[in-house]
Picture 1 (cartoon, chains in turn green, blue):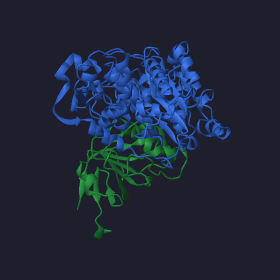
Picture 2 (cartoon, helix red, strand yellow):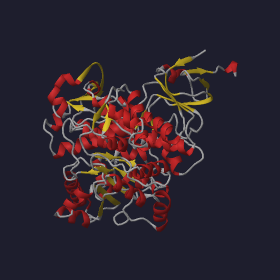
Picture 3 (cartoon, chains in turn brown, purple):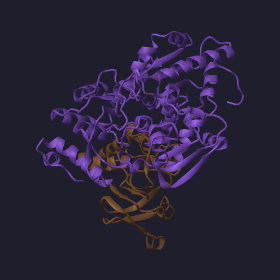
Picture 4 (spheres, one colour):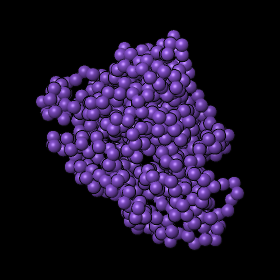
Length: 151
Length: 427
């Protein structure tokens, strides 16, 4: 059973599908189109990231190394949380970056919206879990791949 | 974080609920990154959020809360460019309706909010606040509460100020408290380079592609760039500042670079020499082939890839005065070659309001005007976010604009030929 343990930034439990981005996720480029359209779901719109381009990112667990790009990043995360179209969880293989951290903290303190966030899960998670896999997240920061025969 | 008695009082609500929530947010932010304490902000602010997009409801609500609580920033601040400029960037009626009534419906209200909490002036809208004409130029060692990725990386790298890559909202919070948590790029250790970049190109690399290549490779790490001083020299002047401005913006938008050092050129590399490099660095060698590979990797997002461009944006980040003069020369030379009097494609060059005011007094401005080029202080990125404008085939020399919109990127020399109608089969 593939298990990964990270640092809990915002705890929560989740069981469901994930989307994996092997490269840094550009928050503004990824979420802006859906947010501007007032869409009910986020469809990844970063043309430079084939891992998430065109994929639904609402309600799933997004596994990524870090976020990159514009310093509007935290505000964008706060806004999609306020709109209720955010991913259920952000799972970082590396240490969380300052913009994603801002977004998670802003959402918690100013929107009362708790997006699960766990960092330092290790690089292996990016290769051993694939988009479409089902995973389980526990409050202590454990992320487990739900194997096919266990579904 | 270890808080002083005064900071604890703020956290416990002695100065009001809103200030306590601001403190709580910054303490959690600092704790996450191992900050031990707050340090005082010593320079003016710069905010990233300049646009009154209707959907950013949290911003206007929090701003109202700040105003109601009687809070202001410790120092005045500048802010990123406005998203609309109907005078110089004309739009059709439908576009105007979408901009004013739907997308940027909160613009007027938001600008009033900004003035209430400490915006320097109505002309303080630019992403290049650090340019001498604008005057929000931090000193070496200043501690800042800035956002705007291109401004943060410039202030850290070229001016030697100290600022983390703060998010929108946290830039305001730090400016109000007059304090920021000390971690990352605010510490000597966090400013050490963990990547060595070896430049082995035959000539000065295109700033926007070099920045993109480095950003994509190192993400948020600090790169130390060797071999660039061979082309740029060892002194900061108007030309090198303009180059580093565009280079840095590409590192920050294509990656997440908040600080870079250029050997023998940028202040900390000159002062600290090898002490600014960490142990166990990684190396990335960049030659002409590598840059061409990165350039060719950019996807073309137009519906029809062979469309004729309808609009060209030059100036993201905003052009410096020196760049405006340089572009005037380039356009003049290329129009002579093509035998045309005006540019073929509607072209907008963007610059800070105070740089524009200076340029308006010059003969070069009259030339650009005669060539059919418009000057504006608009934010091209915000303009191209309009779903209608964004679907036009737009070209740009900005790697940042390419990253966040469907605009197609061209090198400076190629984009000049395209807009001036110089035939070149290689473009």
